[in-house]
Amino acid sequence: MDAVLEAGGLTRRFGGLVAVENYTLRLAAGDLVGLIGPNGAGKTTAFSLLTGVLKPTAGSITVKGRDLTGRKPHVLAEAGLARTFQNIRLFADLSVLENVMAGGHLRYGASLLATLGLTQAFWTSESRITEAARAIIARLGLGEFTDRRAGDLSYGDQRRVEIARALATEPVALLLDEPAAGLNPAETKTLTTLVRKINDELGIAVLVVEHDMRLIMDLCRRVQVLNRGRLVAEGTPEKVQADPAVIEAYLGTRRQRAGHA
Ligand SMILES: Nc1ncnc2c1ncn2[C@@H]1O[C@H](COP(=O)(O)OP(=O)(O)OP(=O)(O)O)[C@@H](O)[C@H]1O
Image (cartoon, rainbow, N blue to C red):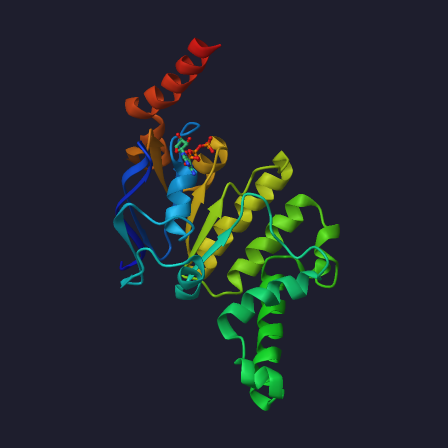
């Protein structure tokens, strides 16, 4: 299967520190990949490189075969990479529908001229965006919240709305940055079901960066493990859990912390 997102040899230095070195990822349609690693392993840096928030010191990023290395986050978003944030970033005062429509505007927004002139093109695109947003909201089981103010929802429901907004951009890949942070166990379970459904039913490739090891092992078909900026293992959850390099990465970090204490 062709890759929708490919990262080759991604490296990022901060002064003398190499935060990520030679990180490689191949995400094809339908892939569901988890990225884990102990504290300071480089997960956030890798995520920021993939989403264009940080520029790589070396390496490349291609989306659907297009080289987008070093391009800004909005360019990657327009090319089909959707993301969520560690700290949910919804428009709290807008309704759930309006939040999800904001995703659609990125994809189908009418041109400025059409908007100012309120031409037929504007109304056509506006009604198309509204209908698409409603369909996504229904598909994700959020129908009861459609007209509610986003800021009034529980944290778990806000997370789902954020994912709905990401889907409204019609992405080829969805990148989730610690989606379970701040969720209770029941909300985490609902989230797991939702992400699996998106991946299974819509065929959208998913990359999840998480601290919650259980979620990653339950959810993902393939897991990558970073340690000190380098990939030390990649494979099925079963294979990765039994890998001595992974066990050492986590134990080593714990030993280090015990040493500092
Ligand atoms: N902007 C920065 N400037 C300097 N060093 C940085 C910067 N961002 C990250 N680092 C360093 O790069 C390394 C990797 O950090 P990163 O935040 O990517 O790891 P992480 O796996 O996401 O960690 P955590 O699980 O604790 O969030 C760390 O040593 C960190 O201190």
